[in-house]
Length: 88
Image 1: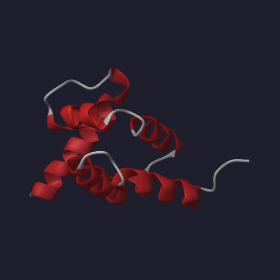
Image 2: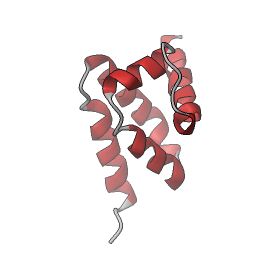
Image 3: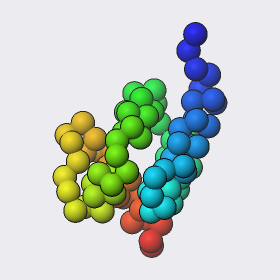
Image 4: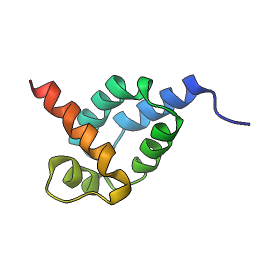
């Protein structure tokens, strides 16, 4: 049985705000709220996979201190763009 779309969104939003480091809680919870409702199934699957990555690695990728793996490059780029929008 597959997960209902509304349950999937809620689960991903909760996983986005319950990270290992506070910076990623803030960044990913804002991103999830702003972007996840518009994502297609493939985008949500990729985001779900990215959430399994180590928080310190994620922070390095999002902050531009390290290059993300190729499969996450576009997603990390979108997270960076959304973060820049928030900063004004």
